[in-house]
Amino acid sequence: MIWAVIPAAGRGSRFGGETPKQYLEIAGRPLIAHALDALLSHPRIAGAMVALSKNDALWPGWANLHGKPVLRCVGGGERADSVLAALQALPVEVGSDTLVLVHDAARPNLRSEDLDRLIAAASAHADGAILGAPVRDTLKRADAAAHIAATEPRERLWRAFTPQAFRRGALTAALEQAQAQGIVVTDEAMAMERVGAHPALVEGREDNLKVTTPADLALARYLISNR
Ligand SMILES: Nc1ccn([C@@H]2O[C@H](COP(=O)(O)OP(=O)(O)OP(=O)(O)O)[C@@H](O)[C@H]2O)c(=O)n1
Ligand SMILES: C[C@](O)(CO)[C@H](O)COP(=O)(O)O
Image (tube, rainbow, N blue to C red):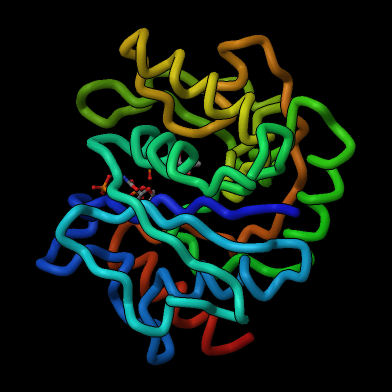
């Protein structure tokens, strides 16, 4: 049994506008519905826990996508707080060794072949696994004036995507420790690294983009409408 955790309590400040980006439409459905659908249509995933802002409601179609439970909890101030709240809210039958896939509601274009490869890697590696892609561009360090200050070495540098797959108990403990220490982790792997884990990197599709700005939404709409 594998469960999904979807942090969806953000406000989309970099995106702008009144409506948080996870509720903006792509191909007639909210962005979050595409993320949920990609996860719950996978035969290995049993259900999902969605961390929402306290004033947000579950969209009626979410109740049980693909006949699987979609539960909700209230998220927190940071993405990591929302993920931790969702892990803590999972049903008791989701045991400590159960694999949990954490996936941004803001990533609507997750594909099943990436899920298959991530699940296989995380199932075979005690420290879990994440989707990502090696950096293929030259990286520049900017100065305060957005002029080039330096070129950074890119050997063995990867960009981290989601889903990120870990066992429920280990990830919960790692996030609780980071929270207690006042450390804001920007992804689940960072919390796991802080407790000595070395998660596997699984190369995923570059089009598993995170919608952060309006330009990202336009690209996501194009990708999903032209699958
Ligand atoms: N306190 C938060 C912040 C973010 N998220 C979720 O984490 C994912 C990735 O975060 P990001 O893209 O940064 O979303 P926002 O925080 O909404 O964006 P911004 O940083 O521009 O405000 C999103 O699905 C977002 O809803 C969350 O559940 N709880
Ligand atoms: C988790 C993540 O999507 C991995 O790249 C990223 O860290 C989220 O960052 P955000 O600033 O919370 O969108």
